[in-house]
Length: 263
Image (cartoon, rainbow, N blue to C red; front, side):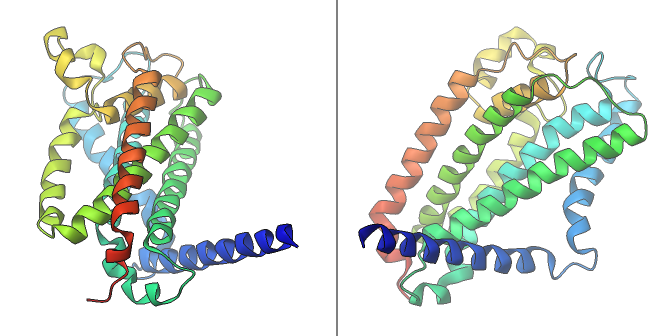
């Protein structure tokens, strides 16, 4: 009897997550004429712009790795991080009316948004890698297991970040304006269009505090056999992810009742 009740609870939760995911997908892509193609066009446009700029500087940004692939390894995870931060800020306001249903809580809304962005991120990487290979832009793949591990850890980091911003954005509305201003500099500090190997060692002590830099370095190490991922630390990324997830869960646990109140 107890196991039956437990299965019923899990089934309800599964249905809630599924319904929210369908709603988020329609909201995310329904208003665009290009529809689901936009999830490929956004990183592709970033790549085209950066490849065009750096083609005037040198043939390859990183020796042995085509520039388009090198940029994909940085742009895709950065866009996932950026979208999770923005979606986390707006998760409560966009779903407030749904919280009248007992089965649905703000955590579900945040989780669905991060899951959707994670699916978009991985799909983008796989599809663009295949498209580039079709056009002859390829390099040997290195380590699939490392790619899975890095991105699972990265998922929990972004989930913790989104939960924290969900709470902080509701308690301090000014944060919604501050976060985009903080994300823009990270685009230039997280290794999106460079490797830490190419930066003078005097700056390493400051840059390595950025977990996103480790994600990008380790992702490139996993994706490209010619890339030296010596500067990416999986242990540091794991510690940063655990810390961020714990912080996000603590913020949510302390404030979730305030989040469901109708304003």
